[in-house]
Image 1 (tube, rainbow, N blue to C red):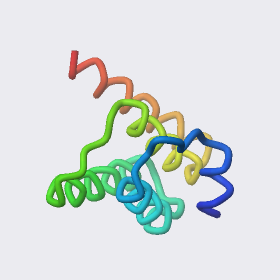
Image 2 (image 1 turned 135 degrees about the horizontal axis):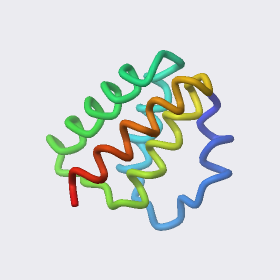
Image 3 (image 1 turned 120 degrees about the vertical axis):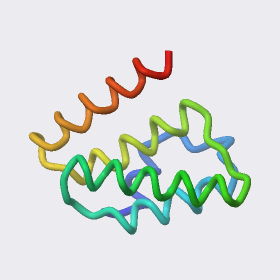
Image 4 (image 1 turned 90 degrees about the horizontal axis):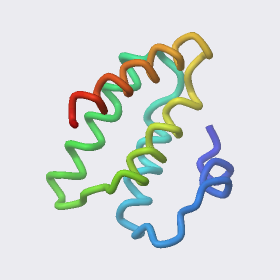
Length: 92
């Protein structure tokens, strides 16, 4: 995946360079795979960010998810979206 193409299409104004660095690292680590791999990559990068005192707002988390979903097949993307919706409902 070409990081620059993805983020040129997304609204990244106002996102700190530190957060963009985490997003770029995630984009380079997760190439393809399945929904479970995607969620593992998301959890890994989130944990690393937390250890460094970096937190993401809802818009930034959605951007990360969209970035990861672009690497999945349509079938795996559908599975991942279902898992994401389930997790969002559990947070409420």
